[in-house]
Image 1 (cartoon, rainbow, N blue to C red):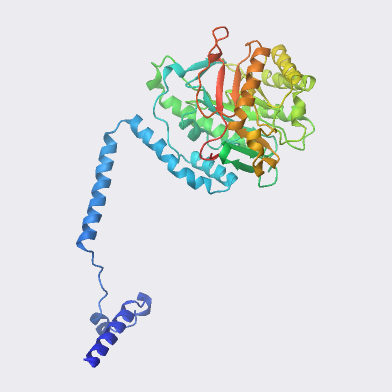
Image 2: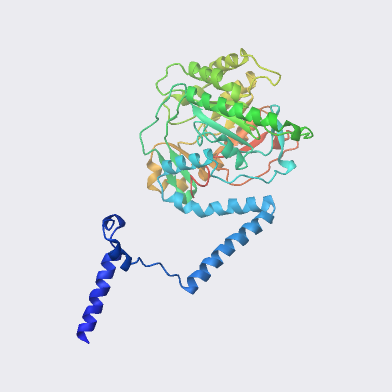
Length: 428
């Protein structure tokens, strides 16, 4: 009995050794030896076959069901499903998560909003027709890489930039810090930009592609009385202009931006309010701002424009200004007939709700929910100072849609709301 058991054990051991030898190691074996030891064919149990069949059946049935579901319902499913990946982004470095989100949008790896906006949300400003008043602020897609993907998410408009004349890497990393408990971030990126030339090439290529698409689909839109969109196709495109950190002539930097990028934009923004470029906020003074705006307006108006005319020119201001500063800006805006103001940029202040966190000591601009009250107060103040004569764009802390209206000035038609950061990047 012991000998038979020993032989059986030896045979099993040798069989395992032979069948586990790589193919390349047995290619010189004789045919007689190889024919005696055939490799084992995996055997699937009855339960395994049933489980596999059931899985394939569910996939086929699910695909068949989805094909019968209306587009709006399926679109809603996709957007709800994206919340499942948010915890993954929370584990990543903030700036890496930002880059990953931009890359995903640029490649079309994000859901597309197929449900049409209610007609009540449509509005027209500067001769541009917006499908809805919710837009994406500058600072997310700095180099115009993902315009189509971001507009496809359902934004009524997207603002790219800030774009500087010469490429610059910005401030040293790390430079983006999350405050998840407060739904906020602090950043000191410092106008990291690929520069005007790279952005102009990208916008030019996108613009040409859209023109071809519009030409091919012109017959299907002939009966559309209220056609939304602009240079970016289905949505409105804004271009935010900045200056280089080492530049001593700010006006020249902004003029370069106008000459190179205005032909591709539905509106232009002069960013004089970032806290991360030394000396930039000094341009918000009455004399400095007036001289700057006059030079930029002249550069824009001297260019050749078609029937639609030149793009509107807006100024983006800081939320940390005194009452006297706001009065000066309002006076310049009215005197020079500025097309609009964006209120506001990030703040260098730290509200009480933020001060308790160690990350609040980081240098940079705070954005997100804590900015809402501050930016809204400045928005109200500027509306009073400009007497409702200038379109105002509310920017910062917008996490829900609120329709505002005043009978006297019809503020609902003048006031937009920006979403400062996408949830997948700035996770609460």
